[in-house]
Figure (cartoon, rainbow, N blue to C red):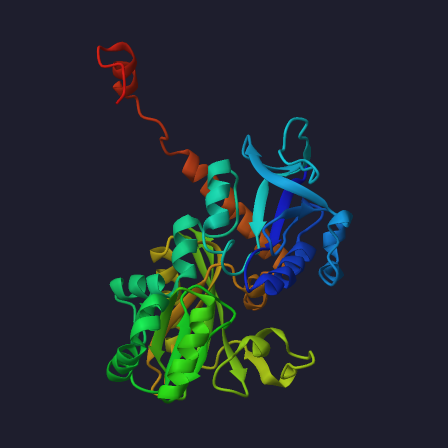
Length: 392
């Protein structure tokens, strides 16, 4: 019998469109001999839908809810169940039916409300297996400040940085700018703490640029990270696959751009009107950094994967300076396209990568269910049966 895989994508996030692209890539790569695919789309308002119309990326152009089924997610017997929903009713009432169900969930969500542990928390409550990192790893991986603190605590090399929130910025920008200039110095990169795909990130080389960059970042997030800009930097990325001690590092890539910083258009709008074209970004695979440094990057990627208690496929991004000093930048717990292109040189095609992710989802699910979730206590019986049976 085939496993039913729910591919969940979209969501209330600035990275909604990237999620759609990645999800349909993954859904198309799933082996139909082994799996039945359930497409689950979350729109920009947070409503859930399923239906065959979601298979074609053109559905996003003029999304018509009438061509799909609006559903309510639920969990029962370790399965995700999608319940039918009548939008004409103010309350759900009676008569709900199971429109579709899945044995395992493949979250292909980028950014907030999906990659940050919120979706994972719901699936944990439903006791449904899923392929991405768990609640803790997802939450830390989404917050650049928390992630940086974890890396620092582990003794991993990171670039110098400071952080603050937008409420403080609103009343104290002068002293915050002075602090950044004193502790970091130009050039700086200013980042919203909880966004990916380079959204809201800008480089500052003077006070005016710093203020403008922080104002932009504050529009996207409550917390702001400011980091030292590494001159003549090179990016090196490594994907990691696994769960617990079964962890493998991929071949390394070095993104190459015509600019020093890869923005959203560089990454996702190549060839589109307004984008920079295919020439703006190429990947050198394997990264031309030498055998010794390659081993160092792979080991640090594995160490970070384990420290964050991750699962599935994660891409760890690094920075090299002109002297080949290595800095760990961030972990992408659901990377764009699930970083499948980093596994193909290792002899793992996209379909087999997804097989491995699903296997690890069930391993983690079984591991969780080995734990004890109850504890015999006499507290309630004493309250009910004893002389102090009344509360308050």
